[in-house]
Image 1 (spheres, rainbow, N blue to C red):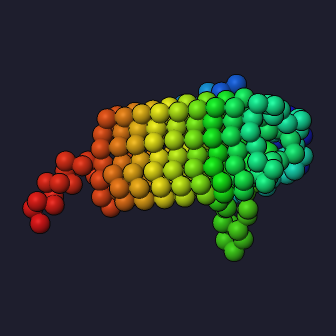
Image 2 (cartoon, helix red, strand yellow; image 1 turned 45 degrees about the vertical axis):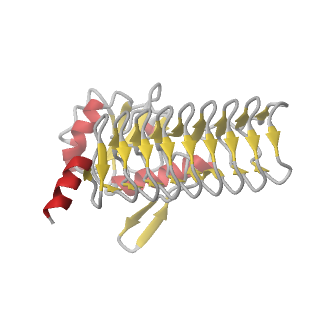
Length: 292
């Protein structure tokens, strides 16, 4: 799609895009239209090779290298961007509707709810009663989805504009790799613009919330009542203890461990163990405890 085809704003420089997205996320293989309200985030755009077009203000546009990007001007770039996104979701801009591909070797309860299109379920997948699988979900072979779990539903994404709250439509998907097990009454949201991803051999306990666009690396264990905020990235072989909370947008390194009940508000390094509210390195937490 070309910027000149849009029905808002003022065209500053022509450009083409085939996806919408955020400055801090990478969308490999896509030509991405994003928005820029403040020039301080321009560095994120420069570092993001996916972005080809920008919705921005006349003032901020003066700071942008116009030979690199298509530009369209708006008095409220963020609102214009999300309203366009919602419109494009309704027009099936992001996905073509295709028939489900469900293996005859999959074991699916008659009491499971399976969406009408863009669902792939491979060999030996087990889906128990009361599971809901929405559209745009892929579940690879030998995975198990226990009763009451919901996969691929819309998450919590809203934008406030003065007295108006705009509900943001979801255009992403969910990919669950081989030999994943998700136990009872867990929620896995689909991505807003990108993908929610569970790597090979990931095991998820009961009553876990995995928000939109979360990426969980291979062999990670997620224990009961954990909450993982949107766009969080978790490295392989990690462990999230019972009742822990992970702030949205964080990066947890490989082999990291989050202790029971921890509230994580900062990135966690490879091989690091964090404890407490707010979570700090476990050894430091114990030292602080001994001083009390």
